[in-house]
Image (cartoon, rainbow, N blue to C red; front, side, top):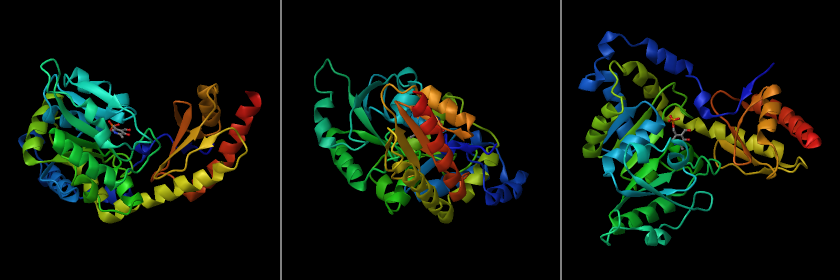
Length: 350
Ligand SMILES: Cc1ncc(COP(=O)(O)O)c(C=O)c1O
């Protein structure tokens, strides 16, 4: 059976160019990265920092680790941090900020990821002797759980002035920041220049097998290096991991993300006028959310799709379809037919 995997862009495998790059390595390209001696990792960190306009960068094993070491480096235990209520750091990172950072996490709502930073003023605490210190605010772009929403530069600018006024650091969970940059046709630095730190994933739309980058000031990255060691992320001959991302960070590979966006839109158009009780959210980038009625048994529809070769995940009465390097136009067209048939079968039986 033909299998189409829409679960995530994390399922992607490397391009032929990435494999070729890996094959060029020999021992002269490797060293002990805990000692700062791996030339391939060093090259990647330099290249990544430059790309997002920061002084320094560090290779982390995952997006979760990159976000965590950023928070640890820029806060003190007992601080409060502000996070949008459906952001990945709050929902899906095992509460690491609280458990490992000793942080109080205060959430705020948004309109599909967008909010007015100045309206968060009442959340800022530190003046009264009884209060913790609010020290950092997080942004997420694209916003995964709201459906891959590409948040505009204006939000970054407003967040920066709010943060300056209140002495807050800004961390950007930019797991998919390049998807946002491509969607809004802006250089990535137009977003990152407003934040103190940015984490972006190599192993999502950029299709590398492993890793994330955390970038920021040299001082912050030096601290993050120590925290990465603390959480067991100090790796040795990590050039093996860093080689493929050197190819992925080239501009033509980043520009390829537009294809994923086109395919998500193609899927959206294909599912739009089905006459079924679904809410198909117009995608900004490579994530398409399809909402189901409140009482619909989501595990059933996921199982039915899976039985028909369509792999997806659900969250909060929505199915999330993610397009990526592993899927082309033909896969999408084929899927539309199967998905509609399966949805119909589901609604007929429910
Ligand atoms: C927005 C966002 N941030 C962070 C992460 C964490 O990345 P990882 O799975 O590499 O830990 C993800 C993963 O899906 C994500 O979507």
